[in-house]
Length: 438
Image 1 (cartoon, rainbow, N blue to C red):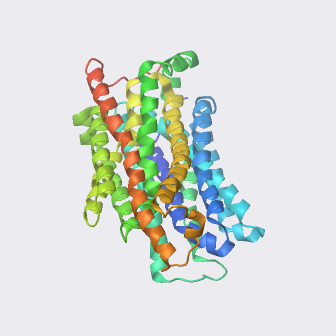
Image 2 (image 1 turned 90 degrees about the horizontal axis):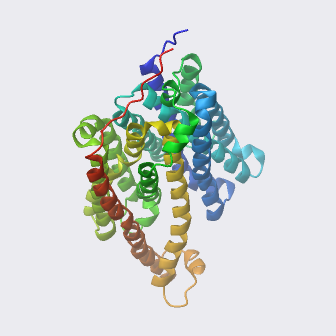
Image 3 (image 1 turned 90 degrees about the vertical axis):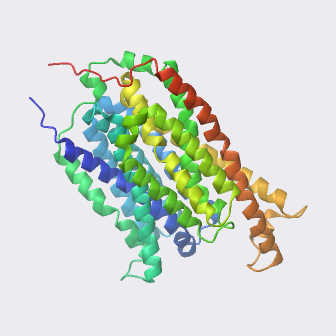
């Protein structure tokens, strides 16, 4: 029986699902201080809660990528809907369980798994829906992640500025989290009704053995290694910018908003950029701009920081979707596993880099405090004291040092992607798998 595939509705539903992913990042970031105050959580406990999303995502996207060809994209996305629904509701009612730590931990893990499950199905879905235009459409799809972060941050910011207090028996942060139920219910309803195509690999009759053989090709391994650098450059900097520049500028959140906002705009207009430069050219230009943006963020102050944010955002905006698009276009036999392995490895690398740089940041702080000073003692000092002032100066110096350390990654990527551009001149720009006719 011939399937009736409503491509536009499937793409719209995919964008709504990714919007929930972005909203979860933006709203969670804004709610951590409220959770700390209301539930008496330590900074360590908050850090563990926030980190669970970065562990749940790669777990789900890699496992989902391995089974999506077997059980189908529709079932994977129904699972994502159920995980999102459970995670959001458990977060809203976390305070009803007595000790809120574990409900927040489990709910954040569920949302992280849901976020990874969305990408496990939607990345190959977009590739299957637009076989001749994968990189552009993956950029259009992935604009909803930074878009969701911007919207989520604005929701939290608006509630705070409006001074809205308790709404009936609900705290403002509970209402903010509950807002995510709206797009979640819509995408769940649409996906349940729509018919799905098979993945591109399955439709073309590429065997599982051929797929795993393609995963071992030098080009795929090269791109997988490069994904470590592109993911860390984009996501680590975005997550830590508020901490790293908190004592360098009065508005670190504005820097994040600028860099994230330019990502939305850049991905929306990815079509002509990808058409004129090809994916590998886009990646090279992105690495150059990301390196320049990081340099400006780590070496300037005042209004130049905002210039650095715009340049950095322009650089990283194409990294994630174009890396996936390059693999989908040039190594299509890797199928859903290839695309999702790229995303899972990238996110896992970010989580490890965050842990490593957390310790590195503390080391920098200790070096810039007076000899023999206790970092814990200085961190607990009251505002306005000599110790608190010394710590602020140390943080103002340590933050740019972390950015300068991370700057090595896009510089390495410039060399790597220069080689990729040269290599790809001798290859076809686009490979489309031909579906097997029944």
